[in-house]
Amino acid sequence: MALLETTGRPDEIDPAEFDAIYFTGGHAVMWDFPESEGLQALTRAIWERGGVVSAVCHGYCGLLNARLADGTLLVAGRRVTGFSWTEEVLAGVARHMPYNAEAEMRRRGAHYRKAAIPFLPHVETDGRLVTGQNPFSAHLTARKVVELLQAPSQ
Image (cartoon, rainbow, N blue to C red; front, side, top):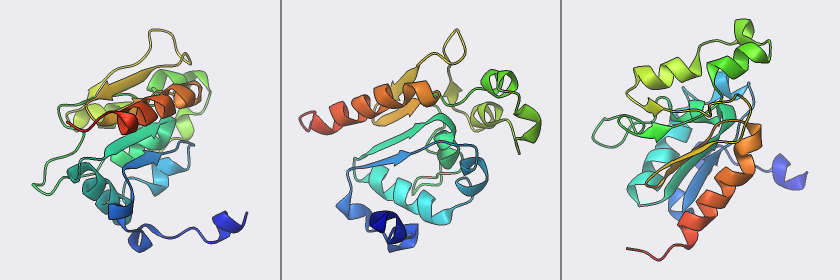
């Protein structure tokens, strides 16, 4: 609990100290993550230093507006996954969501993919970008991030 009480704001974090960023899920992040300039800056800095950018479930909403130094969206042209609209509907919460995250990813040029059967684990890896579809994908997503971090530098 002490660590949670002293968690720094994004603008207090030095991205040079980190090799990866991992966006967690939960519906609240749909409101909190997309417009966070601090999170976008951390993501850009870690990515452009050659680090791993990752997200699981609704955490991929943190990648919606992440832009690189050249102004392009990080997700444009990349394979991603995250909590699907079908899963929102089946969970009975779609009408409460502020937007359809799956559709928003596609609108930004991402190649969104999902498991053939809702709520099954599914992970997409596109270079150093790792995304997991739902809570059941968290373990596999984390494993892939660790694997990339342990890979010899090329």
